[in-house]
Image (cartoon, rainbow, N blue to C red; front, side):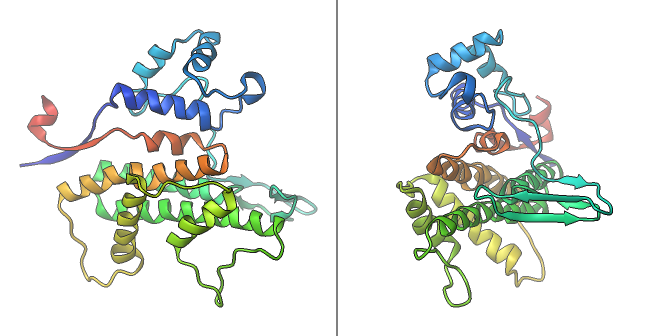
Length: 280
């Protein structure tokens, strides 16, 4: 009997939580006009100024592909094609004023935020995994999603080391640090705040990392196999173990969070159905 993966609608509570998370953490850049959109009343006032009601927005956002008006930043972060030529220099500086990317005298491609670009690639892979019911596409989503988290931690470590000479956090051939330890130990130290590791986000992250390590990065199997039921379960863990953890880390550091990260942290459930169930 033929089966399909079906994306459900978000429960109303999840849609509300997503909208509120976008208001509080998202990269909408309304802070200069509206300050901190951290309360329901303030968000209601914000939407009312744009002729929306919070209730209407929440109901609309129960559908996966609905846009969140006024809050969702739709500008992709994955990179730009740069046109150049003799005498033309295009560069990017980091938050400390240091040049970290440069194209001189020629055209090329530039990414200003490696973590965000990798997450966008993970989302592309994730969507193909659903549409094609493909395990290999899902493994690519895992690899890029986990790489986006590692890139975010690396960026924060770089900033920490520049600001704290003599107290650097090192990961090199003489000081090897596991990925998990960078999250468990480095992140709280750099942020000066506690990261909750007792929730499902951390447990699901660890499970997905094991899948990535054994089935993708360090695979030793001559053949990959998985049931559609298990693939469906793993797809649902992307929401918490990749996007949810990424959102938690951005919140820990007080950073604005790309809209795509917030939306996938509240991705609707994915269900395995038969063709007959889907038709009904």
